[in-house]
Length: 289
Image 1 (cartoon, rainbow, N blue to C red):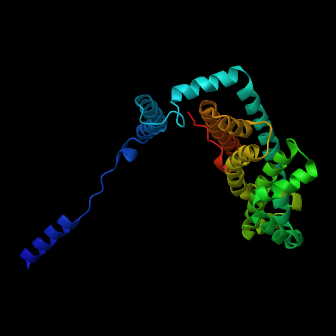
Image 2 (image 1 turned 90 degrees about the vertical axis):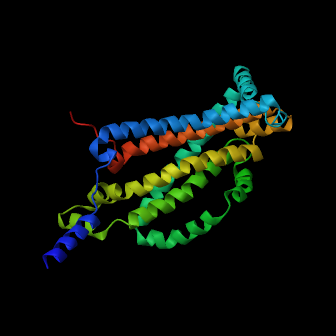
Image 3 (image 1 turned 135 degrees about the horizontal axis):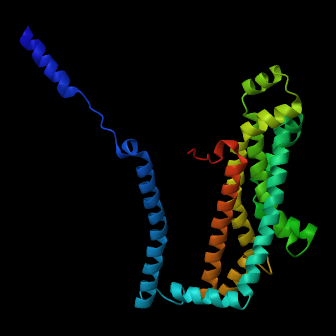
C-alpha cells in the first residue's frame, strides 16, 4: 500500500506544471523599454532597407530607371520642385482643402450623429436616407457638386466633407445608442437634467467610438482629396502627380507621391494624438513620483 502511495506521489510531482515568471514580469520597465527600442528600430530599419535596395537595383540596372528612378534622383527632383515653388504651392493647396473639408465633415457628422442617437423621431426620419446615401460611390456625386458649385476648389472640399460626414454620423449615432441604459437610469435617479445627462453620461460614454471614426476618416480624407485632384483639378498634389506623369517626369511624380504619403501619416498621427486628449479614457496618465 505504501509503495503504491509513493509511486502515486512521484507521478503527481512529475505531472506538476511549474510556471516561471517571464522577463515582462520580473522587470516590467526594462522589458517595456527594450520592446519599445526594438519597435522603433524595426519601424525605421524596414523603409531604410527598402530605399537602399531600390537605390542599388537602380544603379546596377536591375530596375528600368525610366519608370523606377533611383531614390537619389527622386530626392533631387523633389528638392528642385520645392525650390522652384511648384511642390510647395501644391502642398499648401492640398493641405488647405484637406483641413477645411475634413473639419466640416467631422463636426457636422458628430453633431448630427449625437442628435440622431438621442431622438428616435429624427432617427426614424433620417437614418435610412443617410444609409442609402452612404452606400453611393462618392465620386459619383462629384459631377453634382461641379454643377452646383462650379469649377475650382469648392467641389473638392465638399467631396472630402461628404466622405468624412457619412462615416462619422453613422458611427456617432451607433455610439450614442449603444450607451447602456443603466448609466442613463442612474443619472436620472440622481436628479440629472437632460443637458447634464448628455454632458456627463452620454457624451463621455460615446466618445471612444466617435474618436475611432474620426481617426479612420483622417486617412480616407487624404485618399479622397489627392484622388479627386488627379481626376478633376488644376492645383494640389494630386494634380501635380498626374501632370508630371503626363510629361514623363517620374522623379517629381514619385516625389509628389511620397510627400502625399508623408502628409497622410502626419495628419493621421495628429488626429490620433488630439483624440487621446479629447477622450478621457485614452488620455495619457502622468506618472507619479
